[in-house]
Image 1 (cartoon, rainbow, N blue to C red):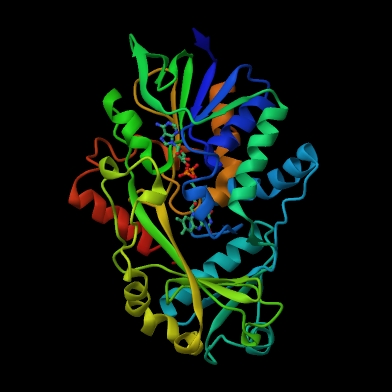
Image 2: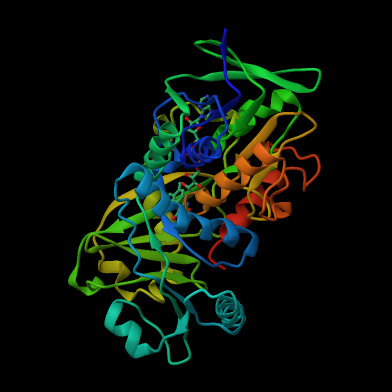
Length: 405
Ligand SMILES: Cc1cc2nc3c(=O)[nH]c(=O)nc-3n(C[C@H](O)[C@H](O)[C@H](O)COP(=O)(O)OP(=O)(O)OC[C@H]3O[C@@H](n4cnc5c(N)ncnc54)[C@H](O)[C@@H]3O)c2cc1C
């Protein structure tokens, strides 16, 4: 019978990061199982934005760690990751958003994060397409950037293998087995594997794995999407990323074009029981629906991007991110079952926080505790939840709508 010490389920950016960190901390016999290929689900669809600061300090501590992990991976794998760091300009127009942005700016200064207020001249030179007013508050966070999430996932996997972890693709976990309240193994479509611990990093499918153990994870698969406009001189050659709090939207450069992401007033959510194994076989957005969503956001977006109407949108990406009601991850030991751990509920920030998430969970598994304060991510913080109920889905959709705030 095959045996591992820790089985990690899911070959997205979170599962591979956990496997890498476990193996690099000396954990023996780490085995990652992925039923499709590495980075085939959310981790191939992300816009890849990486922030050092947000309205959630608990998330920031994990995201900041990822910036250092990128250098570690480049060194271990002897391969560049091509992280681009044009910085982010956060924009706020209305008084309540300006108050929040100002607080973020002050916190950045206290925490040693590069941040400076910039004026209209500064952003009109770099972002000629951006409309602001005389009263706009704009703050530039110089060290933030974006990365290709597919490459990052594969870099974690390569580094995990370097430290001795095994990665098997094309293996589907059918169930997690326990005996007397302790993890004993996993049943897969290729046979049984006995193990002491299981990490559930199955993205939007995670509840499919845990519910039969009596553990309902407080998260809902929620649509995230963005559009890419074709290259245009108006986008400038040196543009930073933009987060517009009033509009609930973000942009980043995309090879001469512009990637535009918009938070909807009411995001689409899905019942995890309906998700097929292959996300590409699932209509996150029905045909034609991509334009409806852009039309819904038109007045908000054209207020800061007057060229919206004439932009040539050439591609659209829609995928799933698992959201929790408070926008914090689900990270740590799950339920009363000894040896069961979860890294899920990524709330649209799984790429940027992947380094911290992987390290923190590996510390919990190897040392019994983490140097990070993980209390905000406690899998039990909402008590018993029904992730199929309409009310719970609405709470998670609202967390998505607040993302840029
Ligand atoms: C459009 C869009 C834009 C985004 N933009 C950003 C961004 O700018 N910045 C950011 O940080 N994040 C962003 N995200 C979020 C980011 O993509 C996710 O947080 C991250 O990819 C989650 O990684 P994961 O490993 O949890 O999940 P996934 O990548 O979905 O991986 C889960 C894996 O588990 C496997 N699996 C599930 N069940 C089983 C089973 N039973 N047996 C074997 N394997 C199984 C699946 O096949 C899958 O490969 C975005 C997401 C979307 C959709």
